[in-house]
Image 1 (cartoon, helix red, strand yellow):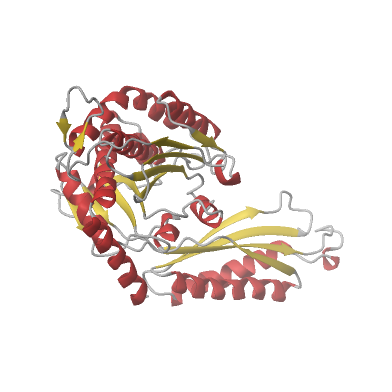
Image 2 (tube, rainbow, N blue to C red):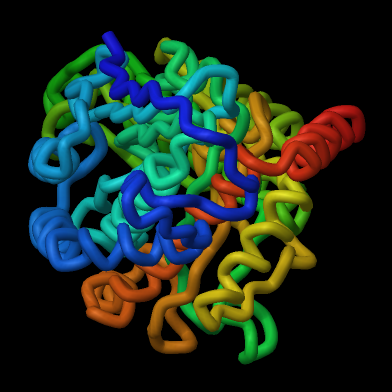
Length: 433
C-alpha cells in the first residue's frame, strides 16, 4: 500500500512562478530555483554518503538490497514515508508527497543496479542521486508554496540491466496516475556532439527483445556409445552458426547479441542440455521483434538438424524511447541556470536500450543524459566508466542534473501550457508510429 504524506493548508494564493516560505511572520518570497537550491544544499552531504555506499557495493538486478535499504533509510531520515519492496518487487521502493487536491503528478525514477564484474559501469548510482535530488527538492518547493497543488513520487526502479524492472512496475500499476515521468542517465562528456555541449535532453534509445532457448538431447558416453546420444551442444552450435549468417543480412542499425548460459562441463559425455540467450536490437520495437522471429527460426533449425527439442522463452521487451520535445526544451532551459549547455536532441538514436522506453509509450517522459568527466574513447559498460562514475565531479554533475529535473517537474505542475504541449507531443508521436 502506498503511504502518502499530505499537507492541507489554504493560505492566500501566490503566483505560479514564485514560492513563499511557510513562515507567516517573515512573508519571504523566494523563487522555485531558490527553494530547490536550498533544499539540495541541505541534503547534499548525506547524499554523498548515499552515493558512495551504492557505488562501493555494486549489486546485480533484483539483488540491490544495500541500495534499497540505504535509500529508504535516507528518505526516512528526511521525514518522508516510504513503502519498501513496493509493488511486490523486493528491491523497489516508493515515496510520495502530495499537497492539496487536483494538481498534476510528476514521478521520478531512481536506478541503482550494477553490471556483473565491472560494477557501476553504467553509472546507475548517479541516476539514483539525480532522482533523489529531484524528488526532495521539488517536494520542498511545493511545501514552500502552500497554495500550490501537486503530487511528487519517486520510484525505485531496479533491474534496468536486463531485468526489465520498469516493465514489471508498469504491469503492476506503479505509473498509474502520473502525468509525466522524468529521469536522467550519466554518459561520457564526449558523446554529446560539439564540445560546448555538456549533455543531451533527447537522446533516443532503440528497442531490444530477447529470447532464451533451452536445447534438450539425450546423454551418452562420448567414447563408448555416442550413437545413442542426441547432442544438445551441436544444436546450440548449429543455431549460433545460422544466426551468424543471419547477421550478414540485417540492416546496419540492427544488432544481434548472444550469451551462452549453460554449456557442457566435461567432454566425455554427450551433453543433454544447453541454454543460450539471443538479444536483438532495432530502432523500433516492430523491427526488433521481426528480427527476433528470424532468430527463433534459427534456434528451431538447430534443434531440427540435430534431433533435439528446443524450448524458447521470450523475455520482456525494452521499447524504443519516445522523445518529448516540450520536456526536452524545458530541461535544457532549466539546466542552463546551472551553467550546463544541454543539446535539445541528438540527430540519431544511440544503439542502446532502456526499459524507460516502455514508460514513454504510456506517458510523456524525459530520459536525458548528463555528461561526466571520462576518457573520450570510453562509453558506458566499460571499466573506465566505472571509475568515472565514482568521482566527485560525477557526483556534482548528478546533483546539478537533479535540480534541473526538479525545475522541469515544477514547470509541468504549475504551467498549464507546458503540460498541454507535452501531451500534444506525446499524441503526435503516437500517431506517427
